Length: 216
Image 1 (cartoon, rainbow, N blue to C red):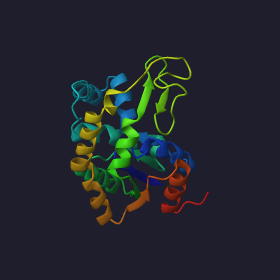
Image 2: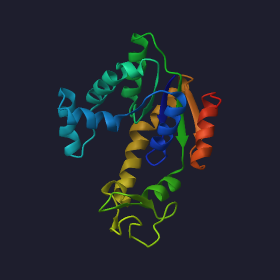
Image 3: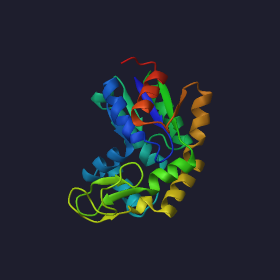
Image 4: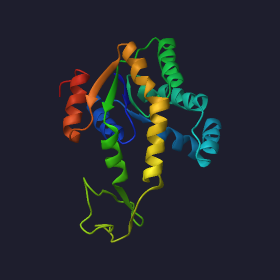
């Protein structure tokens, strides 16, 4: 089964992707992991991606598409995969469908985790990480026993640069302009499955599996 997990930053795509990919017995393919692997191995496209990432810029579509297509051609993805973080733009969405068509394959579904902006802001702005051991917390959903102090090592809890109010609003702005149009694009293709992403993790998982018509 070939599935795309779509949704705004903070919707829980990574969490659901790890769970659902195990249920489907397919690899969880994340653009973040692909970038890191190619940068570490210093591939031609990895070097290009690194230049943009280190400048805080978005990696151009042609570089991202090239890296993802190579990953989709690997043996473990032959029978299916769950894509997380790709596509992010209309051109990436078109490239994915064209790649599958040229390989005589098809996309089974695009699951959209729908979460309102207010909820996304609450989720992301409440994140904290330990400056010493890297443990993650959330001031509302998973608070430390002592405010701003890590339960594990007593290290100081900090806000990641990605989770400051300014950074969060910018990520949501980019999502609205670059990625949100994919919802309509895949809806017109008859591939979109909407799931309420505001529920508890296990409830969202159940709804995703139901949308994919998978019985566990």
